Length: 313
Ligand code: GZL
Image 1: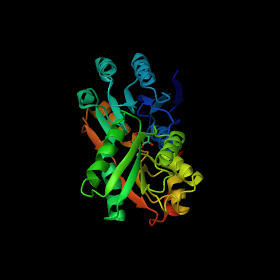
Image 2: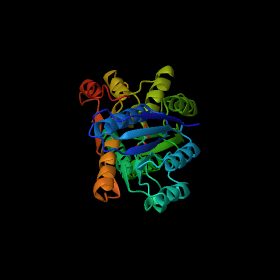
Image 3: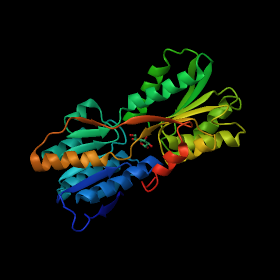
Image 4: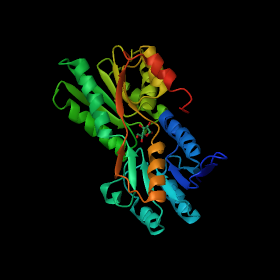
């Protein structure tokens, strides 16, 4: 069952008096944990009462949580959709109850788009492209066999990060994705799948690079490579996405090369959109895009690591 934590509005805050129900995916990655923690502080800053339901990465728990928020009559619902399909029915129920739904950090298939107020996400195709372009620039015309750790099957960000990366390497036929499998965005699965890639690739010597759809799977993959006597960050290039502190720690140790940063603060813009909508009737754009920035081991990883302290990763 989903656990519901309620972060009450800070006493005395200029409470917008709103109550928001947040159907959160779970805590599969450091980035997700940071998003939850930042959402709580962004709610407190605005005097919004926040109810968070953790779905342990199960869509049926998210659907149950949305139904429960509708029954409670919350003012708005935030949804980080674990996968892109299967939301139309429950989102229609929220619309019938006149409760606006805002998507955080992942998207749903276009059919559902008219059922949501807005989506606060990065451009995940662009994230994959930035990762692929970095690799192409780094290896040049040298042949490079890549293994890919995909995110959760059916998640918009996994589909898009794969698409963007493939677009970026199309022009460099010497770069080939030789193995690709989901690690479900977790460290443990990322390690497990990387172990199987290393075995399948004759001990991993021929692997030139690992592309992981998030840093947590890469941290697991780095462990697997080191246990197999390989040198991640040196003999095997690494590029991933999120910009969590531990990937910068790996860069400082020479075990990782590049990451595309994703802000954990999707909720700030989401709260602002909902407050403007509920208090002034302001209709937000259908997409509020957050920044994506490439960081490599040459970009002072210690300073970036320090800048992420206290964000709840
Ligand atoms: C991306 C977000 C992804 C992160 C992962 O917007 O949905 O989910 O990249 C997390 O760390 O599991």
